Length: 346
Picture 1 (tube, rainbow, N blue to C red):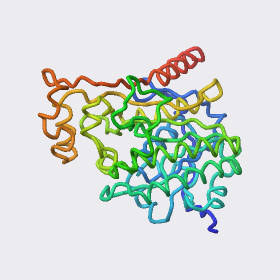
Picture 2: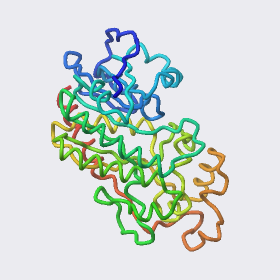
Picture 3: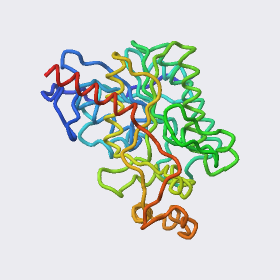
Picture 4: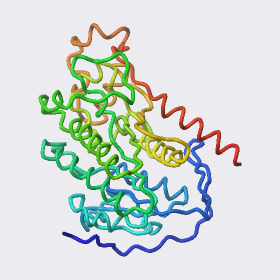
């Protein structure tokens, strides 16, 4: 058993920006007097760092877990200015339940962003990593149930956990849709999809057992603010099978900042009925031109568009006509309701 180790980080200074609007009208409902400690796992990940920045702007006290002390240097590269504003950074291995319990003690919510990070995007995911992702998800939920001040977890899953059903696709992909584990396992390139599907299902099972209030978000491919700038390291494993996603109208993307905002919207709406899963995306790559732009930005030439003759039945004037539609209406309704409540308070 390893004990969680808190690394020395300067405590946050008082700021006067609690509740201020930012990033295209996104605003927070938190008052300075209501500051709460929340914990973000894998703070050295691309998405984790963006979520931390948003939480800090909202006025939350943010505790961060990393898996080893070397990850601290990765965090410093991602969050130069924000490091001194953190409540603490704690070394807690995902495979060690007791260290996670120590890290989560006193927290009002756990944002579980990732169990495994491939910092260089070389290998993507393997079957072993899919197993570790699932075991870590169970540990995070159990630690949340045992140690958190309030048993709430906001779980970052993936749209990949919803869309992989082989050729037997429904007309609509929504929050009730789950990827077929057997199909993902048979198509060995889909290890990330398998990992996200198994990990999220395990989290839901453990949450029921531990009486943890759980919500999950299933975002599409994470993008930098300006298309087609995707994040290379996270894109490589996500885009395995990308040619199929493109043909079926399932290649969805979202600005990483918007995904972070969505997590906070959902968390703050848990007092008003937020529950279950939420699909999160901004746009569908629906033309060959956009697909090629994305390929070029990632130096993955031809891996999405492939042989354009294969797309002939789907393409009309460069536009790809999807066979399946994805909906994000559940999240859109939540954000609309939340925005209305905040307007009434102002």
